[in-house]
Structure formats: C-alpha cells, structure tokens
Image (cartoon, rainbow, N blue to C red; front, side):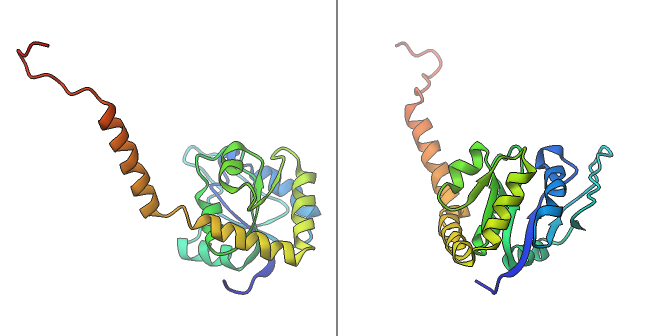
Length: 183
C-alpha cells in the first residue's frame, strides 16, 4: 500500500440524508485531521447538502476517489443504512483504516477489521477518529485487517456464490410435468 497521509476521507452521495453527511459536518470541528469528502451534494429532486466545517470535493472521477481513499490515513462512513458499502470496500482494498457507523451491514462485513461508532453521535465519531489518528500502530493493523477482509469480496467470489445459490434453488425446484401427463 502507498504512504498514508494525515487526513480523513469519506465518499457518498451526500444529498441523501441516509448517508449522514450532517453528522460528519457536525463532528468535523472536533476532528484533529482534515476531513475531505467526495460525492454529489445535490440530488435529483433538489436535495442539498451544504457542509460548513469540512472540505467538500464534490463529484470526482472514480480513479480520484480511489486515489484519495488510498492516501487517507482513515476512511469514515457515517451511513445510517448500507446495502453493502462499496466505498468502504474500495478504501479497505487500499489498506485504509476504517471507522464505520455501527449498523448491521458494516458489523457483518467488517467486524474485527474496523472501528465502529454510533451514527447519531458526533462526539463518538470525533473521539473514534481522533483516537485512531493518535495510534499509528492501530491504524496500520486495521488497514491490514481491512485489506485482508476485502480480498474475499471479488467479482469472481460473487459469481461463484451466485452460481451456488442458483444450483441450490434449481435442485430443490420440482420438475414440471408435461402437458397431459398423469402423476
């Protein structure tokens, strides 16, 4: 992994209240490292996120988001819900230390490889980030754990898992009888 820098990074569609950008903005003044976020701030129906305390980079090309996640000392996601969490996965693949909202999806995927905080508590978020910022050994360890865990979430692994599901479903399905056949 490349050299990590002393900043916190996050990526999401910030206009979506479920991505919880408001909490990041509220916590930002108490976080000792710069907090940079990438992603859309205006939604398709006019929803808008206007942060006052953090650096909003706006929409960025995927390569730039991956570069920032790879350089960030800490990646944070305050989401109130996530079906999977692709941004966290991409950050983990680059060896970033993860600080994630304590929601079921993130717990299931990243338990033991990330630090968690209450996604409704800005003080808890700031304290978790600052504690990790102050502990380079723990950052490195969590980055390694996250990278290791991320290695199981590949397109190939997903294809194999889906084939297994299809095999299971088709094996259990009754064979339809031909028209006019008797049982």
